[in-house]
Image (tube, rainbow, N blue to C red; front, side, top):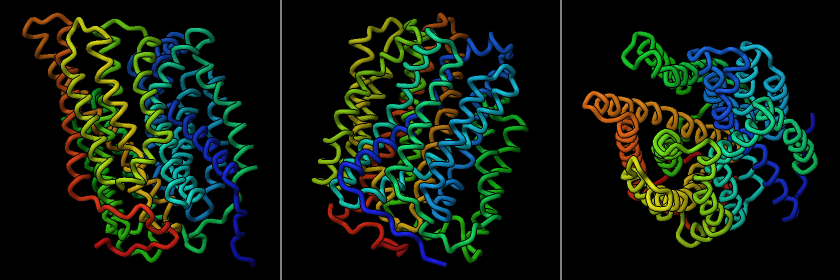
Length: 488
């Protein structure tokens, strides 16, 4: 049997075209986490969902997406990241067609679950593919800036696009629009990126580890997304969280003993990998606070339409684009990862704190725009060094796993953070209503508390990054030259 084929070298133009293709695939996945939210009222009226069952249009996607991120990344290492990316895009596109043609509740929810599975695979390996395409530090920093912008801005773009498509063509088109994009991404990826057999192709899949961690993540995601409905102190929620914790403990035990682990525990002896993932959990919680809580403030307190909410995020997206698509890379090359990460997170914390003072009768230019600009600035500065730190110390054979880990950290941090913040906001709103405040003022009191707590998450992440992250030289060796030796 012949060895793994050597990937054909790509010139600079081909590499950047490949990056755009990969980012377009990732953007399609990120959009689907929020684009459907705007269309939920139309879906409910058309398919006859109840208020309780409607949440599964969102939850089915989140459940499989969160559950399979880690496994998807490791499968990419074992069987080839390009192959897994293509399989994920194909699965997501076919599921999008099923969603767009769905005429029953069961078909839509099932197709959304399959979408989440395809999305998890794409998200888990895309970051690793990008890191492998760009080995020169300067180019890699620029490429990660583009990827970070897509991830950070995709949610707000989804709200804007969802409002446009639902209002003009109907809710089916929020899914059908994925078809030409998915086909184009698949064909261009085949043309631009060489086939690979996986850097860890000689290894075997750790079935026990895969089963325990996937089950643990799915149970944890289900407990979180259903927590506000079932109650955080309910037997259901406590049993689900306890089961998830027990399965995670079993996973760690298996990984410490098995010969070919799904997740080598030595990965977390790499200081920057561990620090970046811890900071990523807190940062994702802060980002979800920004996106969801500020969107609720604009919609329920200021009375904005979904389209106006999407436009309200546009200034932050523009600032992120200007930073992420060039300036952020120069900052990283000049100052490394630690300083820009801490500075960007502090800017984001300041933006959230500023947003938290927005009153009931707020004015966009005075009470929304300044916080949006600071948040866009902070996200544009911080995301690039965070992603680079999470990936740069990892050997190529585990790059897919590291990509899955950082995506899982963002996913779980965002979901858990949003659950905590939503519960705090709801409790504060309830007490405000009981004290006699009008509904809008009571809602705003809850949002202010949630945004302040989100600001504290970002500030803590900044301190962790500033204190614990190691500052490598900008021209450090590529991952092919590194190993799992502990950082000293």
